Amino acid sequence: MAYQPFEFPEWNGVENIDNWKYRRRRALKIHEASQSPLLRLRGPDGEPLYRMNDSGSIRRTRQASSTTIRRVKERDGYRCVWCGSADNLEVDHIVRYADGGSNTPDNLRTLCHGCHGSRGGRP
Image 1 (cartoon, rainbow, N blue to C red):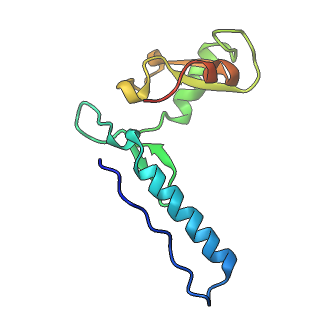
Image 2: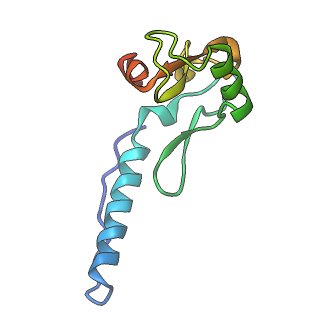
């Protein structure tokens, strides 16, 4: 995906200036998100792994179900598997979703927010 030049929405002098500033910020966010390499990732079936919603946020196309998340946390004793903390728990993909990791319990583990954040970034 080549970089696309971006033009801000013009202010017509009549519209409320705060509304125009909001539209301008939103348009820029959507433009920046559209350049993300995550939107180019495809699964083995050729389907996109991530999508951009109307507000410009990038989301996974297939989320782990709340039941699966609860079962993983139960299996791990509601504790971070790295440091043992019981605060700010999140469910982490062992093989990253972006690298083709599944949402099945055998590819998920419970980490606290700190450990999850220290794990590494996206592509």
